[in-house]
Length: 272
Image (cartoon, rainbow, N blue to C red; front, top):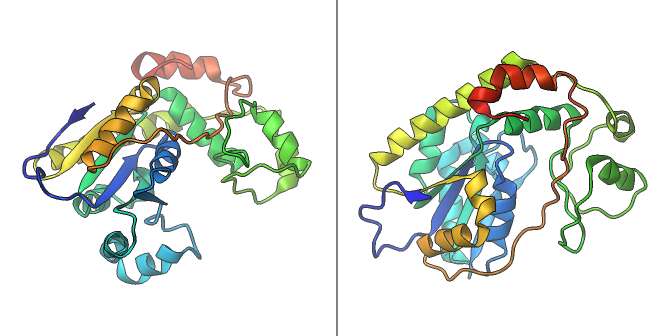
């Protein structure tokens, strides 16, 4: 990890932060972990225009992203929590300038990337099955495979999750469903994401911002180190509480064209 730019941030209180992330990069895990700190609140995608009915959506729709960030900043001064921030997936923005705008409102920007074949396949798989994150009720890690989680959900066992499912009956069909994901779709997604993050980094290097450049592999290979670094940039002591998000996709037996994807993309973006 490196700090890209911190020119005049020394001595200035950093109240707000944003996690600008690639889908399937660990952004939900990171935001949930930061939320466990007693002085940090991390909001879940307040700039996602698809989250109808949530408290920030009306402000976003009527007044735009600047009004949302002003609301977040006001929470920092009103509540006992010292630092308010949020996570945002860059592909949810209309264009790169929207991502730059979101970054410009924050004191600390965390760029979290996982630009590889595995992340893209996981993203398109999640879109197809309309399911994203799973947790247990006691916030304890349960290393379960995808079918096991679905079986428990269909049996109405308690699983505290962030799942969005329009048709529960369809989950049975998806449990062992074979899928094909187009190589062109994966390649275009990865190339655009790479371009978007490069654009963000070029912009932020020119600005008076504290930017933490972080990857999925770095975050999960030395978790304690990087959580400590983020807390340090916010002026807080680190804590030892971590999110226990369940990782559900552990193989690619469901992916019919796995070999073709590896042949086309593996050398450039990593093999499955």
